[in-house]
Image 1 (cartoon, helix red, strand yellow):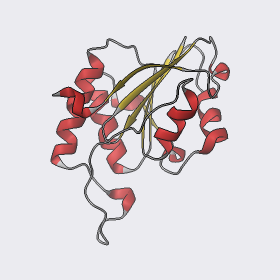
Image 2: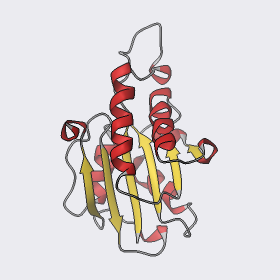
Image 3: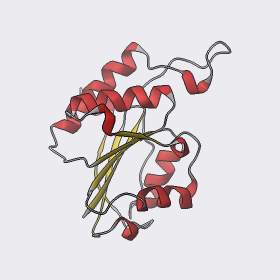
Image 4: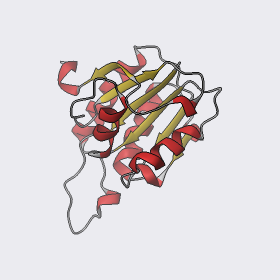
Length: 165
């Protein structure tokens, strides 16, 4: 079985002329909520084999919070520019298919609308909108990453920050 876990970045500073979109940081609340969601994911006892993040600062900050809570080494975090720009269907699949088949779970950190769109296409029953700091896990009954196809995944769980209360 292969598993993709999508994490949308936490709440970030508003876009302004002083700070470009790429450099926006998480707000204090964004950091707190991201840490809470990371702890909730840790409680699921998933084994994560690969961490891949958009290099945009708010996504990278979110990823580092999760990496810390999950007890991983920050050097294990890969950055992929395609997760900042909408990767599109074919680029996303090629990113996933490049991962070693020995790895069974990938944790991805990025942005909407791309993440909601990808989850909606990957899961058999689709996915609803992913809020900031939301976490969606989709599993696939395949042995190789090349077997991951759109419309063939099963949503395993969808954690929303509002559910944490």
